[in-house]
Length: 176
Image 1 (tube, one colour):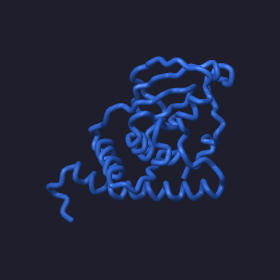
Image 2: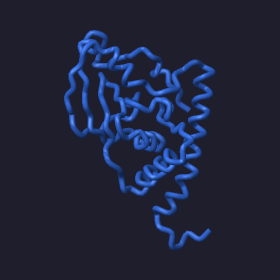
Image 3: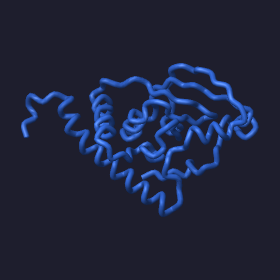
Image 4: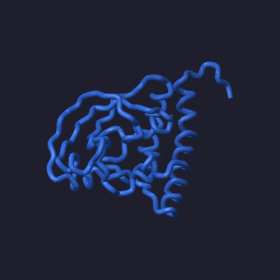
């Protein structure tokens, strides 16, 4: 194969196919291991988290760099990603979206911030699931996010150090 004349986006596009396949294989093995061990394999549900809260108020915290390890859930896509945000989808659209984000990340073009809700120290993705997936896959520590924090008396009463534990086992997410 002749690489002369190929630009970095073309090379990254070719590479993204293999990287997506690797991520999907890791997701498969993670799901299998999770089902065998009984550990959490899915993302936490934002709806379930909000249901636990007795009442809540929101405040926009604006654009921030947030830790990817604290992103534990989703507003709407529990079944599309593993608890580590590895892609589980078989759809062509989902695959191409992941690959496009991968290319933007590895070529240095970057991508827009994700949109998240914050409850205690945990974050739930509203928009940007593929961006979180690729960033975690690439081993990034942080990602830019527009953050909306949800306050509740439940958090203050049941937490220490500002952490809110929903007790659904997501902290046992398998790292493969």
